[in-house]
Amino acid sequence: MTLGDHQNDQSSIVVGIDEAGYGPRLGPLVVGCSVFRVAGGPDGSAAGDLWSALRPAVVRSKGKSDRTKIPIDDSKKLKLANSSPAPLMHLERGVFPMLGLLGHAPDNDAELLQVLGVRDCVACGEPALPSMTAIDADQVGILTNTLRRAMKAADVELLAIACRAFDAAGFNRALVEMGPKSEVSFHAVGRFLLGAWRRWGSETPTVVIDRQGGRKHYGQQLARAIPDVVVRVNREEDAVSEYEINSRSGDERRAMRVRFEVEADARSLPVALASMSAKLCRERAMIRFNNHWKQRAPSVKPTAGYGIDARRWIDEMRPLIAEDELRELVRRA
Image 1 (spheres, helix red, strand yellow):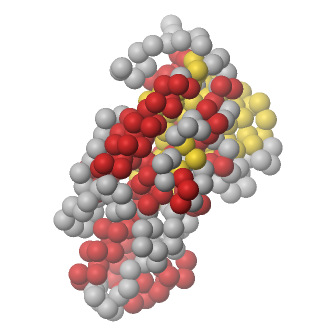
Image 2: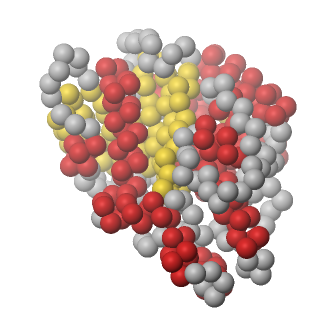
Image 3: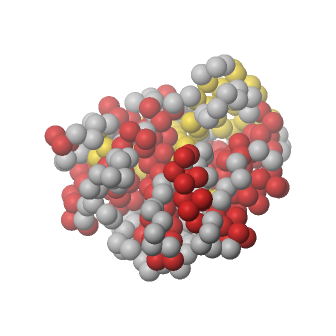
């Protein structure tokens, strides 16, 4: 089926958006997006608990007893410590079967990143690595078939998974052009909003976005992201901000509901899947990053790019490479 082909008053489009890598000094900022068509009315209420609807195939837990099911949850809960034997196991068990539903079976990490739309993260000229670190194609095939049956029974359809990324150099350029890093992150969010508006705006999609920081007001940003619209504020509270967007002119009426919610990845499966996709992209990019610098500076231990450990890596690298090269690797905010 071509995306957006059928318009059905008995179904709704639900979009989830979340990011990974907002805080670190090294590696990319990645914003992920997932899109579902869900049985029910066009107000988005039918997507209230996709975890329950897809229970035969999907689980929040990452426990051993759930090996036959697909973990979907906040990526911070599913990502294991880098010291564990397979830190990306649960992210891969969730994302790869979803990609399988869309007909994607990337052979290597470069293909994985490109399938998800992340080209800036394919850096350093490193040789391609296997696309999966902890599971194999046979396991993905079994999980994909289980997921396909559950989604058919629940009348749920996955329409898209995608990511956008800023590597460190791109992030720094964007800071100069756009201002604070919240605006850099929202630029990627805005691209997804505009894409959803153009493709599914005639079906009044509901977009749920995980809210970062203390900001409550997004009306002006929404109006900038989507041209020629009227943005109505429904509420702007500590935990959630809700908006209605309507077309200002044109022959075809379009509308969209947008909700920014604190910890949305714990309440919305589409947001959780977006979180997992973004996190998997970032982690695979960091594997490439560390492999590259391990060759050039064997004495420097790998880094996840956050906090004290990022400062340690930068300090250890400073005597080993030119300052302008190091500057290109470090995010300024």
